[in-house]
Image 1 (cartoon, one colour):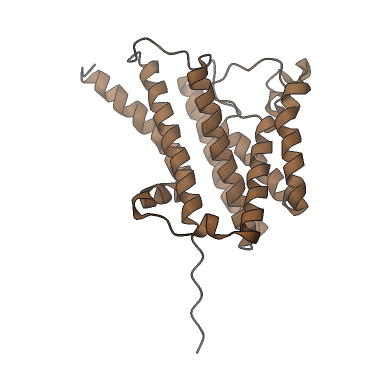
Image 2 (image 1 turned 180 degrees about the vertical axis):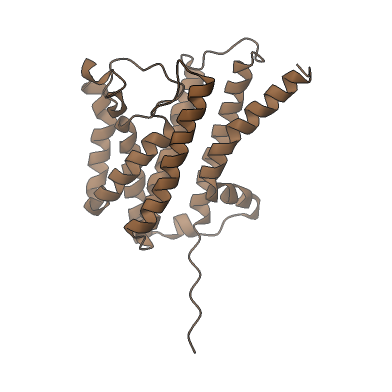
Length: 245
């Protein structure tokens, strides 16, 4: 009699960490949307006020770091290139939808290389670089530091600013260039490889029941990412049409 297949290991702690990043992101976007509808007093400068810019940097750092951890888990589980490309295609397709939606809503500052666009490129690069193991730490550090020491006007136009070595930030609603953010993903990948080798319980250990909703959210992070802004904007638009504010 054939033995039943073992259930795949669930990394609840990693899922919960990713879920926490998604909740923080949604709260940030809700504040941004309130500001867009001029419902915050005083109006906020989301692109200049350190209170908001630092939050965005922290949210994106956590999100990208978790993506690196997830890459380590996928490779540890023996994920092959065919399955990787299927998941990658979902991310890339969602990136195109974000571009299309932002071009309709913000035609002068549409998103041509935002979070999902950057993730799509970084996922491929991190997958290719995963075999260097501990070398990911210094390489990640170089990626994080390079934009601060090697800026050049060549990288300012839209055709090349996705690299990240810009002298000025482009006019767009969201921007996640390759540098420095690849460094954060490589650090997540390196951390995941080390934890899975020496302390796997840090990622796969038991999770308090009260945090299980975060883990569930983390397992559906791409879906949540795609629907949360349309839902928030739709609710605020409906509220304005009904005269609630």
